[in-house]
Length: 358
Image 1 (cartoon, rainbow, N blue to C red):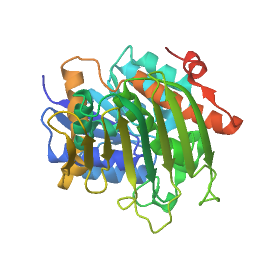
Image 2 (cartoon, rainbow, N blue to C red):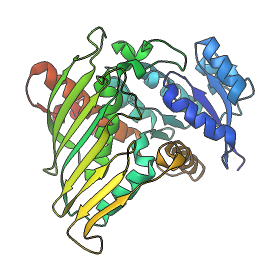
Image 3 (spheres, one colour):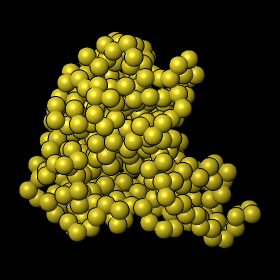
Image 4 (tube, rainbow, N blue to C red):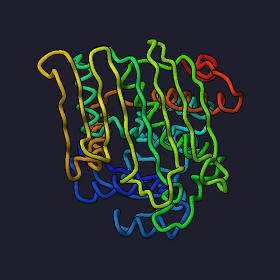
C-alpha cells in the first residue's frame, strides 16, 4: 500500500508530539505527516508550516474527515482522549495514543471499547528505549533469575513542565480536570506500565503517599510514592515527582530503576552513564557488566521506534502492544495510589479493575 498518512491531534504534550514530528519530517519509510489539529491557532499554524505543508485544522473532527489521513497520533490534554479516540474509531482511523490513557477509568474503558473497532496503541515510551529493551531481553534470558522487587524513581523541577514550547507556566498539566493529577501521574503511569511489562503481572494492592512538598503554590501535587504488591508476589515502588529544585534540569535529574532478582540485579538510567549495569552470579554474564549508548540511541530514538512499530501494526493488521488495555491497567495502578494516599491505607486493585474492564 502507499505511505500511511498521519495526522496529529493536539500539541498539548509537545514533549512527545514534536520529536515524533521531527522524525516524520526527516523521512520514515511508509509514513508521512499530513496534517495537525489544535484549538490554539498560533501553535497549530506554526507547527503546520514547519512539519506538514501548512495543513492545520482548529477542529480535530475536520482532520479526521481528511481522506489523506489514514491514522492519527493523539497528544492532546488527557481528559479529551476518550472523545477523540471514539471520534477516530467512528472515522475508521487507527490511533497512537499518548499517556496517560485517560484521567479516570470510565473514560479509559471507553477507549478500550473503541479499540475493538480500530487499533489503539499506547505511546508508553519506556518500552521503546533500546537500553530498556536490552534489559528486558536479559530478564527473559534469566540472567538475574526471577524478579522479586523493583524501584523506579524520577525527580524533575515543576518549572520544567510547560504546556507549549514557549509557555511560561504549566498550563493544562497543573489543571487537574484536564491532567488527572500532577507530578505523580505525569511520569508515574510510565513506570506502572514498565513494571507490568517487566514483571508480567498486574498489581494486587498499593499503599501510597502523595503531596505537595516543594512547589506548594501548584493546584496539583509535586510528589508521589507508591508501593505495589503484584499478583506474582513481587513488590515494586514508583516515585514520580516534580519537586526537584529549580536549578536541577531534567537531563541532570536522577531517573533510575533498580530491578532485583533471585540471581542478580539490574540498574537502569537512561539519562546518566552507565545506562545499564547488570550484576549476576549465573551463566556467562557472571559478575558485573556495563552498557552505555550515545547520541539519539540514548533517548530520542524511542520516538522513531514507536512510530515504526505503530506503522507495522496498522499496515500488517496486527494487534498493537502496548494496547489500550495496557493503558487501562497502568492508569488503574496510578489512580489506586491516589486513593490510598487520600484514605491513608492500603487499597486493593481488584475494585479498581472491576469498575471498568477485566
